[in-house]
Image 1 (cartoon, rainbow, N blue to C red):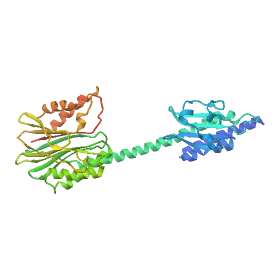
Image 2: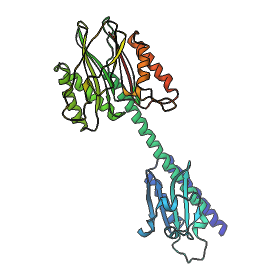
Image 3: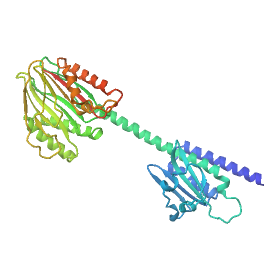
Image 4: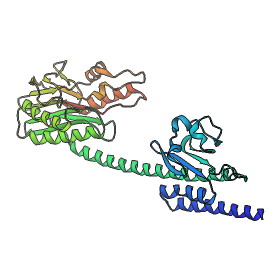
Amino acid sequence: MHSKKRLDLSGFKLRTLLSVTQAINNNASKEELLAFFPKLLGENLHIGKILLYTNNNGWHCEIAYNVNESQTGINIEEHLLSYTNICMTHKSNIEALMQFDLLIPVYHKQKALAYLLLGDLDEERIEVSPLIKHYTFIQTLANIIMVAIENKILYKENLEQVAVSRELELASKVQKMLFPSVLPNTENFKCAVHYKPHQLIGGDYYDVIMTDKDECVFCIADVSGKGISASLIMSNFQAALRVLLPYIHSLPELLFALNKGVFENTKGEKFVTLFIARYNTKSREMEYVNAGHIPPLFYANNKISFLEDGGIMLGAFYELPELTVGKVNVPIHSSLFCYTDGLLELENEKGEPFGIENTCESFAKNTDLLPNQIVDNIFADAENFRGNNSYNDDLTLFACRF
């Protein structure tokens, strides 16, 4: 009789594990998998009390079977996290755990997935508690179910990450379309750029716009921050600049309008540094405004100077203070190097920044070269400087040869 009972019980446990495995293979939901606990443990194995806490972005009580509200007030961090192995709890010195008899921690790859607390309702019965008889089976069942749920969560997160990556790749392609596809390369004016976003998309911006056959406007800008938010502000800024430029010839007036747009869109929480210049290839005159940007390096007559005239960054205040317009006569064979703070802040393995001194030295070695050679050589110097250290910001190097 006892042999038949044991055989029936073994068959039940085998069928149960098979049923759970089939449910997992059929992609059963988290709720469907958790429903096995009260049904199998409570109804079939006659476990009196079941309390299950799971860890998914914080600890949550998922099942409270035959457990009153006063018995669910367990502080996971304080009462349970120290337990890594199955143990009896009725002799615990923690009152909340004394309400139960058995604790089964469920771990996967050193992460606590769940804590299963079980207890008898009838403490006076003579026969062996079902907790004692079935604890190894219950532990196996709990591990199978909770690891399956964890794998479902990880799989979903992975799918979401893949979707986000695809969206970012698409955003990166769209952002690249906002930059000039071809830069000027004439006898009077040549440009080149090296653009490296910190992530797939970034908050740096550069542009060259021919306003007529003898005149062009070029700029470099840097939105505070990086990543998606910075790229959205940058895209909006680029669109505003291109829309306003044909109608506003004055650089200060153009910047006043752009400043209001940035402030209204970001409510003063973000700002844009900008260097913008208008160059006439016939008169060889260049006027510029530097709105809080790192001063570009201008090489002419064997001397390097900083183009600093302008004012404060855009977007910090609704009304932009008065701006100073810088004017430069551009001799033949002059060159200009503009860049964003990603170059200055690039650190080597000792934590030392590339800085303005290295930037000036690198530019000084390359002033007589073509723009593409200037940006390539300065980028190579920066690469050699950083060694194996990673970039911590967007990086844009923009050079002109007049």
